[in-house]
Length: 311
Image (tube, rainbow, N blue to C red; front, side):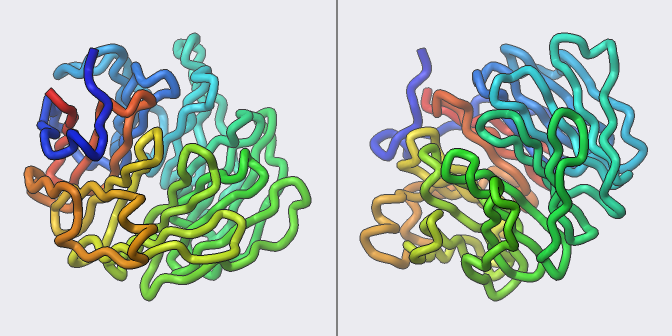
């Protein structure tokens, strides 16, 4: 059995495999960790059980570039978002039936997130809105961001929706009461990604201002700032036990950070990363740990997706 990636063995992290594609926008693991989705300009490719040269399934049908993807918590559904303004919802046990198509955004759909219960699907787009979908229908449209919504994640067991956008803000939205969002904090440039730890109590945000910020999900305080990537941070991912944070950026680097170190010191510099990997040749655009924390997938503008693990 492969080892979990931890602070103690992270320096042994090694590239295990890679595949090449065209424009890659995201990588996402299924809840069970046995399926890797590669979301790219031309579609979605699913690798089940193994990571070879040929995907197990290819999901097509969008008429614009595919910008984001998300698995439902029970692994039954996969949602894809596109510049064609639509969301496609695929039932993974019946792919031949084709997708259910959700329409509502007036611009490119940039980001997706399922709630922990799976009852809600959240989307954010270039039209500056967040939309909540329930039972394949538009449940609510939320206004507040002053520019494109770049990333979404649910926190506090689904009670709060976290969003980050090109207006440089990280915002919290009360899902149950559908109240106006509050600004958790701001970066000095636009927010490219938000992520939430396993317990749902800590938020990380990645900014074009070259920093990662760690926030209390209740909105009470800022925990820490990580000065992470020269040129900007594109992507972040918590390890399943939330002891590590991985990041990728414009400097083509993958870095892994200790959450404990960040909380203790309040500020961490680039050279204080536990590990820095320099194998990608262009910006690192997306990353994800599998559910067991034994594999880290990274996708880059160099048109490769790479799998990392401890031998």
